[in-house]
Length: 154
Image 1 (cartoon, rainbow, N blue to C red):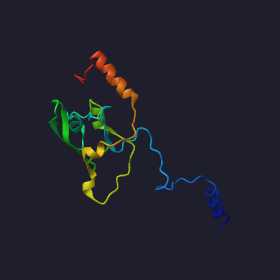
Image 2: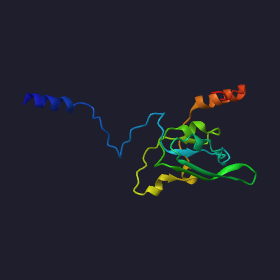
Image 3: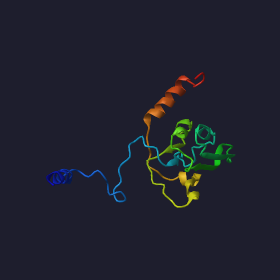
Image 4: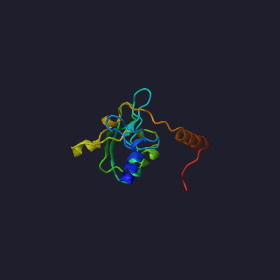
């Protein structure tokens, strides 16, 4: 009996391990890969030029896109979809994009009772979002561009 009270009192004054989840959310680590976002330039135009590198880099084949040319003759994606049921949130699409048009944010709540809602369109990803700044990625690309370094021969 005293041993049972010992265990009870030992845990009574400890800090709780769990959170009151719907009301309080645990902050995610900075490197967490969650919801996909598409970036825009400062003038409001889309960064994505529909080069297809993100779709080629995706090991789950979760990205589908169709290109078109706009009025100025620039390529853009008329259809851009990500199937979240297939996506493994590896971040390869983010790394492969030469325009830094796609990135994975911190949002992790995707629950729904309809499977069709897990196929995200371009309009769902072109929303205002908190920026996940990665200065090393920009510096690395800038240095490679200045010195003309390519990945040929790797």
